[in-house]
Image 1 (cartoon, rainbow, N blue to C red):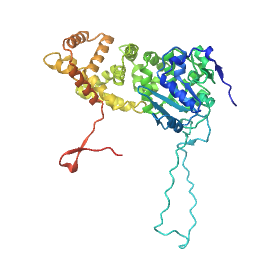
Image 2: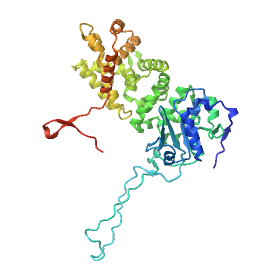
Image 3: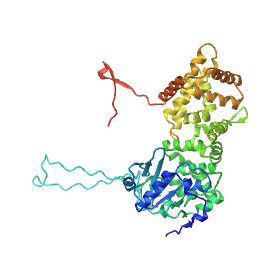
Image 4: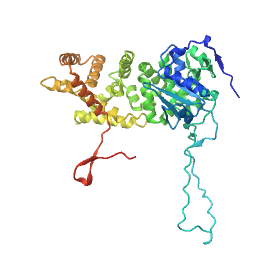
Length: 478
């Protein structure tokens, strides 16, 4: 049954073209000129209506990905789970997606039960009828991957079934993210009551919450993020279903969850997000070992470290400072890592070995839920290890340490821990004065930056030819 959308004319809403990225407008108008439907969609429309600055501008169209690529020479097609077109401009990428359908075809089911039934044997042929030994059979045609791929319990793994604007709106996650801005007449098209929920300040899943969260468990994380970021409430039925199905988040891709976690804590509302994650129990699914530690008390007091760390990160983000992932996780996990390292030191491990083992074991365990890459894990280890170096303030060591690539990150951690715990205030003050009295030259800053980049770059091993002679760098496979 077709749904009649609510059309909000230009005179009835506050969204103006002057707030939309010029590059997004170029894409919208170009698609319109070529005869396609094209709407500004998602968070960009939501944020503009709320008077917020959008992080990005996404477009939905009835043009297929290959048709979009023909229209724009600066287009690159990406994605397997969702096929998308990225239009590259000098300093911006505009994402263009084709309208998606609800269920247009019978889905391919992954992990179907095996059958013991054998296919029938081919009929025997006489020597005259059989093909000559040297005859080559044509190679079998490689089957095309299914456009819709789901697990047996309904989680979507691939969805490239295209549909209408109405179906596309119904396939989106939350009502406030399903509003379309029509460049043809500057109206807002609302199929799902998104404008009303925007006024009420509600995050409401579109459709049956059970079905939608099973399709994509990460939607539960996104609900928490939007509620915290926008200051909205999660609609009652949506919230109740999240509590019931939160354990399904363990099925989400760990690499995808890493990207989602960065969004959770690096948008300026990390502490509020953390509290809502704890309230719903989702934090325990994402970080099970860390959650167990938070639930225990230290000297009769609950652990408050993570909340304070995220308040620090929020202040940096809101002040316009960029917080890299290794700083975020080092601050969040700091007290936990220090306690575990101290336990290993008491059992006889050296300081460096204790830190290395603690970080490696934690990231390995956590990789089943959130895949934190090595380029983030190694700088985290260095930050914790370098805290011991601050204790040495005699001789030439401070000057040498000051010029190490990891010094700035380690000092950031020292500042946070000192201000949070009230400890090492004199040590922090000493190093602050030392930094002031020994400014780095532009050349030294450049060398330190090169060293920092080298530390986060993958290590390329060199091989020897036959074990002798000069080493050579192996060329990547093509």
